[in-house]
Length: 454
Image 1 (cartoon, rainbow, N blue to C red):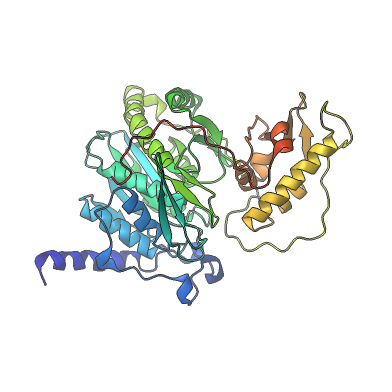
Image 2 (cartoon, helix red, strand yellow; image 1 turned 120 degrees about the vertical axis):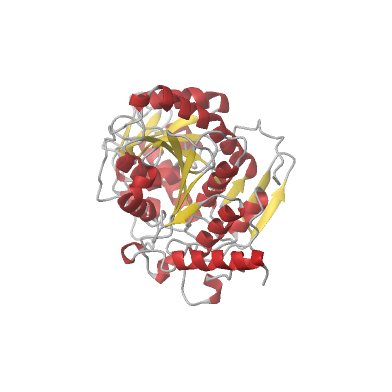
């Protein structure tokens, strides 16, 4: 055996030991939820010696998509990421849960923490195809399986940021396991190894669908100060980005434990948690370029204003009714009980409230059918509604607080805003004009000259 092969085998053996028994008992899920039954179709061999650790573009993304890594079964993904980092000379550590910790080669204080998660909600391995067009490349499955753009797109960004020679901002990375089962990996990291991030001043999590959202607040916690929000809005304007509210992600655990500001940034994937999930390379690259744009700005901000580093005004919420993904199957549709406004016969000028609610319920039925669940129906069955004073918007009262994941699903189909009461505010015009299966159209098309194979 050559010295090179011997070193490679030693690395593999070390990593396997580190990731053996990845998830502690309290964070693991039953086999029927993870898809890890003793059945060949729910598993896939990874040939360690054939892993392509030299890829950086579409090849890297495709390689990760084809690794089956449901929550609690990320072993092969952790191994791949560790080998990739070693091949690219990035020193890193793996904790007993499987989370990966790393720094880039830039020395300095006031480091920016970059974060993503390695697990997915997949129930079976995906076969990946790449469809090229003049201005984009689309990655999707050919066997109607979740590809894991949520959140391997974020992992892709983190790996590239750590190794990008044009980045001179000091970065610290945390790649987590078991986010989809309740952010258990990041909780484990914060409970046991928060001191690794003592010199971090901001958390940039990359785990949001689409190509426009900067999440400054999750359903359970405010992520950053008004001062930082204003800067993010200013920096995002040339990129046509918007500040938005999200549901649940690892950034909540991180900013609360470290008492720093943070955001969750878009990552170019669509139809998350469905067999129709796909990634637009165009939109993923937009996210990556924006990350490179704001990293030195964030670093300068906290170097020049050290008093703005600490953030504790989280306004944290705890709601017992909040669900996490993969908590079990939903029962079949039961007897329908229509939810209605207090007065359901008033006219809004063009449509009566009764007509608006009928249209909204029909949209919910259609979207539930597309998702293959009753997720939205059971949440919105007991919700309270009212029209805005202008009669141009329907408000799901405290929607972002009580039904964050359902609101997140709806936001694929409607433009949803919020207010101080955490109501979900949906334009009536969009409800009445909804077409079955029609998702919001994209608007950004200015990044069209990148080499997607890089």
